[in-house]
Amino acid sequence: MSTRSVEGQEVTWSDLRDQTAAQLSDRQAARWMIEEVSGQRQADLLTDGPGPSERARLRLAEMVRRRLEGEPLQYVLGRWAFRTLDLMVDPRVLIPRPETEQVVEIALRELDRMDARTVLDLGTGTGAIALSVAAERQQVQVWATDTQPTALDVARANLAGMGGAAATRVRVVRANWWDGLPEQLKKRIDLVVSNPPYIAAGELETLEPAVRDWEPTTALVAGETGTEAIEAILRGAPSWIRTGGAAVLEIAPHQRAQARAWAAAAGFAEVGIEADLSGRARALVARGAQ
View 1 (tube, rainbow, N blue to C red):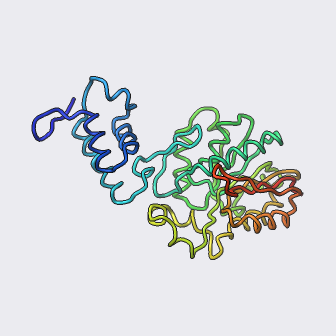
View 2 (cartoon, rainbow, N blue to C red):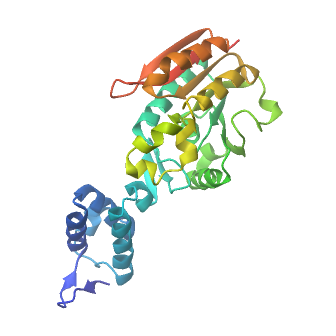
View 3 (cartoon, rainbow, N blue to C red):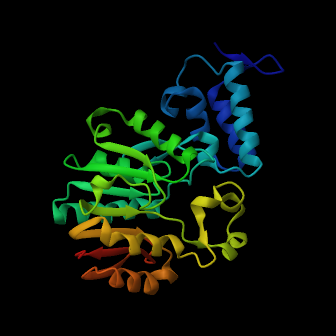
């Protein structure tokens, strides 16, 4: 049933979209919010049919308020697209980014090269990497870990929402990098892939407010240098990755030399750096574990 404005005229979904776009100065964000509130695609809403209920209008107003206060659009919507997936996201987890989609692409290439069967996603957050690998490669078993129970709750919710056969091939467990992993995985992992924290503590204040003030610090900041998590993953890798296995880690561009050095010290026979879509060094690729 449609609602009416103060003047007694019916308020349509198109009206709400235009009003929201004006408030946010962002027509695309307005369209996404309208679709989230209505549960329908915009093309279906703009035809003749029931207008927004009062409840829908109140929910939209609350979303607009949150966005105007600086909360990231992804959190306001409560979900975000990542490759083939539609993931639940909220302030318990880092927002999945296009750079990480590219890391998944690199990881899939490594899986195909090795005909891998066992994959480990360290620091899974939303589960974006782990669930994408399971969804896009039917032959693999995927383990997803995080040290934060709240993040694991989100990953499990996304796993449940994924459903289907792919979901049966994903295990979500709590672990602090390698500490806490099941002993059965020792020297049996074909590929480890991770988007670990790689921001230095001193860099936090330089980040955009939408990132600094809203996203979980534990998923952003690794420590004083920003390389602590990368080092921990690479130093522990030899005990867990099978001989000939590989690692794909997302890094900051200025960390490439140090990351390469740690991978070589860990015994990987071949170490390289892959660029993201903007041409910046973004992923460490280490092959041939000893």
